[in-house]
Length: 158
Image (cartoon, rainbow, N blue to C red; front, side, top):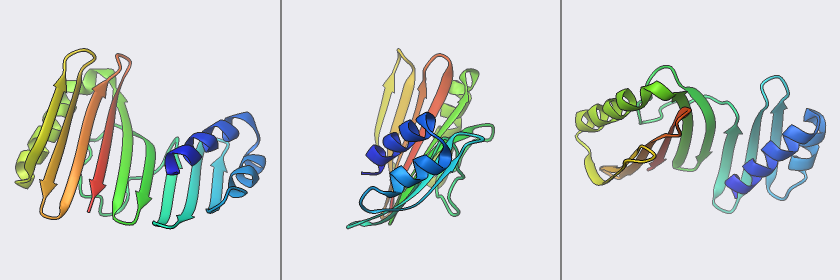
C-alpha cells in the first residue's frame, strides 16, 4: 500500500501545487497527514492501515532514530518507509563509490557477528545484496550501480 501511495504522491506532487497534492492524497482511504515540500519536491505521508501506522517520505527524509544498519557518509536519502517493526531506507551516492560502499557493508556485517543467510552478486550491472540475520532481526542490504548513481536499499524486519 505504501509503495502505491508513494508513487501516486510523487506523481500528484509533480503535477500540481503542494496544497492541491496534499488534499488529493489525504482524500485516499487510510491516509492521514500529508506534507508536500514544493522547494525540494519531497512528499511525507502518514498512513493508517490494518497492520499499523506507516510513515513514508519520498524525495528526501532522515534516517530513523535507532536505525540498526549503519549508513556510509556522503549519500542522499531518497525514501524512508517505517511500519511497526519494519523500516526501509533508500539512498543514492556518487557513481564512483560502489566498491567503497560494498566494502563498508562487508565490514559492517562482519563486525556485527550477524549470520549472512544469502549473498547475491551480479556483474553487469554491478550489484551486491545480502540478507543477514541477527537474533530476531533480519536485514536486507543491496548496493546497485546504475552507471550514473549508486543506489543503496536497506530493510529491517525486527
